Image 1: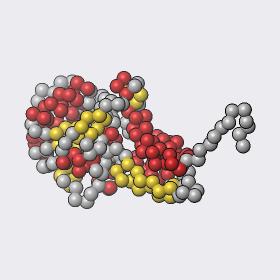
Image 2: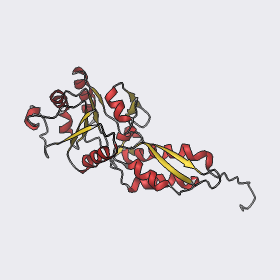
Image 3: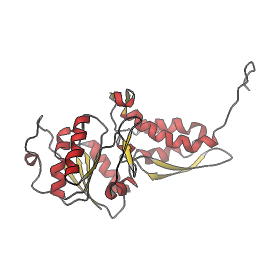
Image 4: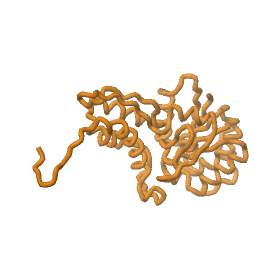
Length: 254
């Protein structure tokens, strides 16, 4: 699969580094860095694009400016891409109105576009839109990417006697590499403490999602939403191994 990653700063650079290091070796990844500044309204996209861009099956937009999102239909034409993933780890990069417009523009070109919010909500069939809402899609290139990167999925091995996590395999990493970092930190942790530890490791990585509170996410942040996604994956696996304590009213705990 030929991939063109669009970046504008450290956020995108870290994503590309993780994909290049841990993605399938047969993926061919090229990078284009956007201009530093965009005008409020882009009338002529070609004024902000290079003369040529490499051919691509899939475009990954990690740009941190809505101006870059407006260039994506033209980028898809230049590269011949059939699918686009736009990371929405900050709504300022892709406001909701532009999100709808962009998906419509690309659909008219026969290009599938997904806009996962946050980026680590992407699976092989759907992606997050709000706290409760997801949107489904069908595209072989995006699905091939989402098999390796998107909604974090860890496979934990837990000692049935000690209740200690003995191994943590990364089935699907977050695009930023956070899930791999969390997996390494969970080894040797008890099932009782694993969920809390996963949240701390996620926070300290650090997560690259926004800390702005959003009404569609119950006034929570995309960073906290991202952390909860990973904690939920850990919680489901450690639940059968947690120590259960019963408290009887009127009696002192041992």
